[in-house]
Image (cartoon, rainbow, N blue to C red):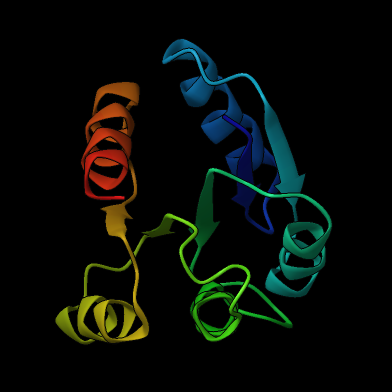
Length: 122
């Protein structure tokens, strides 16, 4: 299953890629902001998107809103990753149609559980 990870920090991209590898997901592409990710999603179908929330110029929430508004992409499973566990952020992400939510820091087991939950619901 192809996975797109989106984060503006190269270190975080590397960490998430390594965690995905630990759970046998090796077909991984990277984007450094929501705009780049959206273009990549238009060019290749992804089975899952794992996106950071805080990025510029296009945030993870804005990317999620664009994806959910796009008839070709709206069913793509989407996990939001953030360092913020603020209730209003979780509510905003849920309202925008996020599939699941992970608060940093997290490990491979947490990631595996969130992905399993998203895939069983898809």
